[in-house]
Image 1 (cartoon, rainbow, N blue to C red):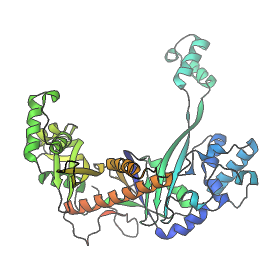
Image 2: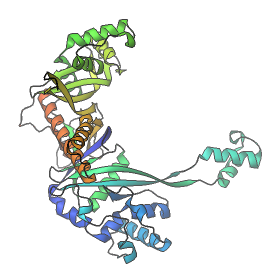
Image 3: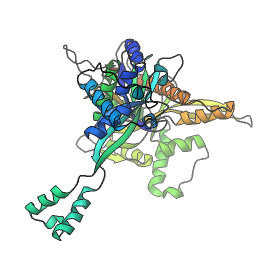
Length: 439
C-alpha cells in the first residue's frame, strides 16, 4: 500500500455498520476469523485458509504461541464455525491471548468516521522445495540414470519415494472499508483471494454489493482515450518531439528550457484540459490499432506513440495509462510565478477494468504520486510524524477522492448529463435486470 498497486473496489451496504462493529467486538467470533486461527487451520489440515489482522499489526498472530492442544482446538472450532456455524466457546487461555484483534477500535482508522482497515492473510499450502530436483536426485541414487530416461514403472517408484516438501505460504493484502461512502478497497487482482475476502467480511456482518465501472457508451474505455486524444493540447510540441526521436538518439535530443513542457512531451503523447480544470495525460504502456483489420501494436515510448497515431486517419488508441492532474500557480522564493502540475491519480485504462465474475471494479496500475510528497511536506511543516491510523486514514481519504475525480472526469469526457447513471455502480443481476455494459 501507499504506492503503485492494483485495487479491487466493491460496494458496501452502509446499514451493515452495526453488525460489522458488533462482530469485531466479539472475542470468540474474532478468534475464529483471525489469522491466528487461519494459520492453525492451514498447518493442521494442509489446505488454504484466510484470516485477518488489524491494520496496525500485520503479524499480530505471531505474538501468541499456541500449545499443540490449543492449536488443534482453535482450528477445529474455526472450521466448524465456517462450515456449520458454531456456538462453541474457547479456552480462556486462547481468548485472553494477544494474537488477534477483539474490538472495533482495533480496526477503526478514524476516531469519528466509520473507516476500518485490516490485513487479509492468505495461507496457501504449496511446494516449499523444487520437486523435480528431488526426483532427479532420487533417480540418480536409486536407478543411476536421469529421471527422464526411466521406464514408467521406475518413474512411479521414484515418485512414490519422493516426499512432497510442502509448507504454508503466507501473503497479505490491505483492505479498507468505508461505511460512510459504502465502498471497500482490496489491493489484489487475485479472483480466488478476493472471493475468500468477500466471504470472510460477510461472515463478520459486512453486506457487500457487486459493482462495476459502467458508462452508457459502446466500448467506452476506447471512446474516452480517443476523445481525449482528439482534444489534446500541445500537438505541435508532441509532433516536434516525435520528429526529433526519429532523427536523433535519446541522449542527443536537447531538452526544452520550459521544464513544464519538457515533462509533458517526455512522459505523455496526449494532454487534454477538461472544462472542470482537470488535465488528463495519456502515456504508455499503450496499444494502438493502425486500422480496423490490423492487430493492436504495443508501445511504451510516447514519441513512438505519436508517430504511430499520425500514420493513418483511422488509427485508434485501444489501451493506455492515464494521469489525472491539477495545474496550480505558485509563487517562488524569488517572487516569480510558475505552474505546478500535481498528479491526482495514475492508472491503466483498458478492457480489464472490471472483474465481473466477482463483482469488482478495478484500478490497475493505480498510484497517487503526490500523496507521498504531501505527507512528507506535512511532516516537515508540523515536525510531527502521523500515527499509523493517520497514514491509513489519509490514504483512504485520497483514494476515495481520486476515484470520485476519475468517475466525474469520465462522465465529462463522454458528455453525459447528471441524470444518467455512470461510474462505479451496482451490478444488476437477476430479476430481469441487465449486467453492466462491457467497455
